[in-house]
Image (tube, rainbow, N blue to C red; front, side, top):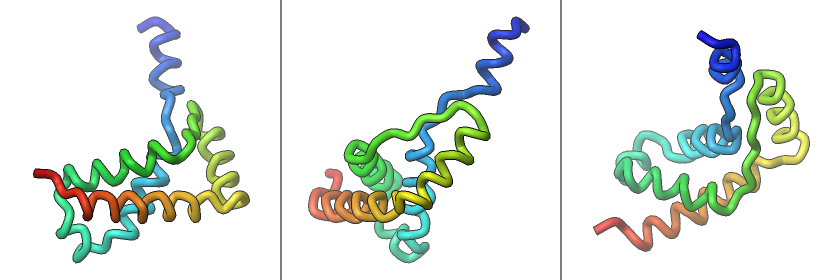
Length: 97
């Protein structure tokens, strides 16, 4: 396998904001609330929120650690929670047919 392919597998481009939003949404939707949303509705909530949040791309573990510190220092979680709550309200008001 060429070294460029190996390095691409190790340095996969990921949007840390997606992981953060997913984890926060899981915490927000306890098992009781989660059952009130279909998997499609949960994906809609994530998409709506992520479209209003900025991306935080990284390719390395060090980059991910740096972004974790940024999230804590800049209180990014508050912004994510705000956008997820707004998205939940939109999805509740406009259920899939």
